[in-house]
Structure formats: structure tokens, C-alpha cells
Image 1 (cartoon, rainbow, N blue to C red):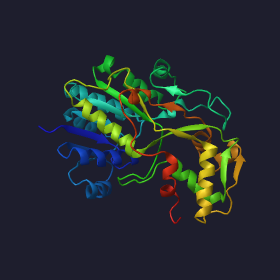
Image 2 (spheres, one colour):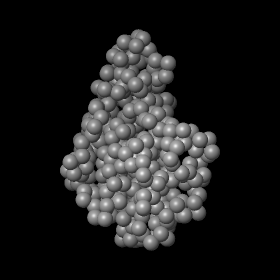
Image 3 (spheres, one colour):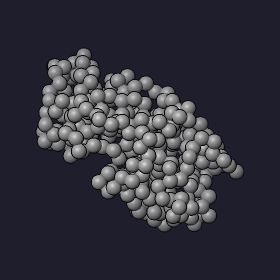
Image 4 (cartoon, rainbow, N blue to C red):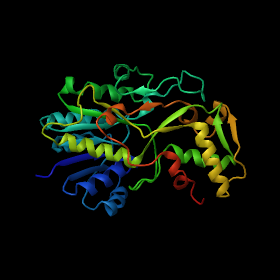
Length: 327
């Protein structure tokens, strides 16, 4: 019998890419996706006609419980911080006899450093092996804390087999209905609007990065492992936390590379990288100081220890395809 997969986030950037990848590799899988509207269902169906849809949102407890109870694997690829949906999935898996495996998409923003001055160089590279005990005990001041704690304790509390996948800053053009991420494309728009590059203070902060197709490949691998009678690679349960990254960049270096490209394209007139304050950058975007001025310096030590390697190139090779529309 074909495996049953239930997922959230199919209309999103990562979820849409995952749906593309898993449908291409495993057309026999029975995939059910939660979407908010008939319009989303219609748009995604044009790309993935074999997918089954249920209409609802992350607060649709009854729907999520029912679908999770029937699934062999459940993937929460929508809002990483949505606590009610996390509880609903767990309730459904328990209702289904605890056969389902829960894969939760979080993010490397859980280590965003707000203690150091914005734009300063990284003083620590976080490892999902060596630093796991500290990650497991992050307090509520850390992004994604609440849902990650639920997943860390899912096995001991509910007997649920689970894992957390935490990508670094994601880039690249996706193959779902949402094409671009929340990270670099808005930054490139801000560069264009300002007419020059900028960096927060010295711009020495390090950002680990991961291509959306690589992240989707990792999620497919986790689904495949979840469906094995005995997992050959993945550790599940309270220690199942995996960063995903394929290198990274120093922010000022990215700004310089984008500046050169934008001048070549006639989008701006100068390659100058202006140094601005966190207060100034916050006028561009409510989360700009965090996204563009903090350190997200992580290593996917666990995945690479399993033999995983990214297939895509580094972020500098994809800047042109992420330029603002009309460029």
C-alpha cells in the first residue's frame, strides 16, 4: 500500500519545493496537503495534479487531527511557531496509534545573536552535534523555542517519533507557487530602492545559507527514512535536531557582490557599500536589524556526518536570478 503523507505549507516557499521534489521522486506516495483557500488548491493542482487537498488553516484542529491520524508521515512546513497546529498534529498521531512520524520545519534563527552589536563578526559557530545540549535547553528568548521544546519532548511525553529540521537562511528560486524567500530578495529590493548597497555597522556578521532545493531534498530524505521499518541514518526523538546549510557569507561580501551585479545591470549607479545603523535599517523592514545585522553561524554537522552534501552551488551563484523584478 502506498505511504500516506500529510503536509502543511504546500502554498509556501519551502513546502512548495518539497511537494515538487517528493512528487517527482515518489509519484506513488499519497500526499494530502492543507491549504487555506480554493484558489491555492487550484494553483497548486496545476503543478501537482496528483495531490489531494483539504481546506483549512493551522487553527483547523479537527482537520489536522483527522489527517494526522491517517498519515504515515506528517510534515509541518508552514509557520514554525504555530503551537496549536503542533498540538493538533501530535493529537492526531496519538489517535492514529502513534504510527505516524512527525517532521517539523524550524530554522537556524533559533541562534540569532542579539547580544553582540549588530554587524560584528561571529564569535561562535553552532554545531548540531557539539552544541545540541545547549540548543535543547534554549529559553523563551530564543526564536522557535516553544515549538522546538514540544518536539524535543514528543517521544517521552506522547511516544511520538519526531525530528526537527532547521535550515539556515534560504535562497534560490523555488518550483512551487511561491518562488522567492523572505530573506535575500527583500534585501535586494531594499538595495535597489536605496540606490546603493548598505551594511549594518561594519557588516561583518556571518549568515549561513541553504538553497531551497537542498532543503527540500533533506526533507524528502527524512520522509524516506521515516517510512523504513528501521531507520538507517536518522536519529529520531529528543536528540533529532538537524541544521541544514551549504556554506554562507559575510554580509558585507554579499553586499559588495550584489553591488557589482546591480551596476552591471544598470539598476544602480555605484558599487559603494554604505554603513548604516540598526535604527536606520529598521526603517526599511521591521525585522531588518535581525535578518541583515545578526549572526546566523551554524554547521550541518549531523547531516554531513551521514554523508549528505548539498547539490546546489553557493549563494553567490544565484544572486542574478533573485534580483528585483524588472531588473
